[in-house]
Length: 355
Image 1: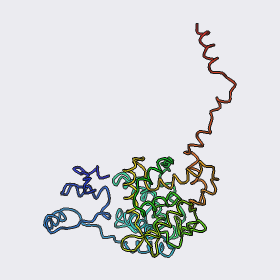
Image 2: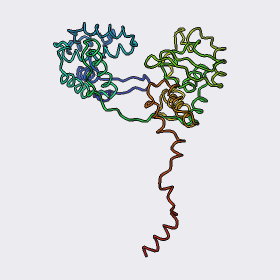
Image 3: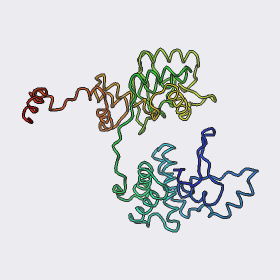
Image 4: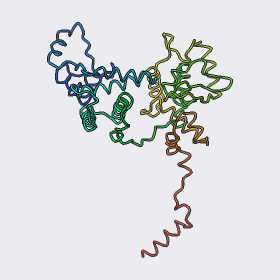
């Protein structure tokens, strides 16, 4: 998205984007991301220049019906939605209010909401995920806050049927061997060993791991569902060593300040391991979870058990792994293989006929 701003450039050393310090670049930045997602930080060196630039651009819109945002937030909090979901819903709902600043959202027609979505797709380059989250936020406000009938389904993007990336078993071994730090290795191996999401791995408490029963308790996973998953013998041995060295107080994996380890830190250590091991460079931490399910399926585990271990509500979500397992592909045969035909004989007969 940043490439759409003329003059923008990526600096690998600083791991950040730079854009020209002018009004046109700032205006384009607002078009792509929205004014609500931009914060201007003034430095002493450029304070006067920033003030001059700010006078040349429109100020941030003060939402006239911002009380509706508070109503949305209160309802979400009453239904115990997660902080991240509340933040996301509020952000997208504010964009809708800013798009129609002089209209109460209750007066908006479906066609007008569609125009907002189309504008955001074209001007902000929303992907399928952003569009879907915006529809979720809007639906929640109209159905739960205003009590209207369920609607807006036709405004959702068509679901793309993407197959998840998966490591081979050899790649998993290479990845783990490249990690020398005991804590880092324990984190990545537990994610693969138990099929955890990244966010779940940082919320595992010390008491959630039962080394005797060889189980890991995942509290309030995706969809606020509790579940138990497996703890392998090798993982138990590694965790015993880790607990002896690090002595975590509450969380299984703690940061330097004593709180839970951050997902961002896991992503960074995973990226270092990928670069060092030379495995698929397009993989993510979530690839370990995909590999967990795929490798279990390849070794004959029933799909229903895998569904339980992963915490999937629907079997359809788990069934995606049946399309990518190597073992399943190797067992498939074309119907041609079952016909009583000798290809060599047919080739010789065809040659005589062509003469």
